[in-house]
Length: 71
Image (cartoon, rainbow, N blue to C red; front, side):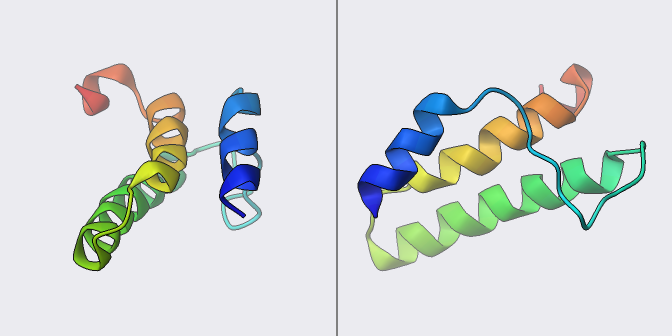
């Protein structure tokens, strides 16, 4: 399973379509991925596990959110 995640991370280009956010305005999608990233990091830290899979959320919100919001 970890190999599948690593393979997906290597092939990652941009944020995939998310059916929860079908409209052109992707602000909510940006915010949701930002929250998911931080929740994932917190959960992995609590388990003592590697937070590598959380990087997917980081890449998605970084590609969706305006640069001024990310910095």
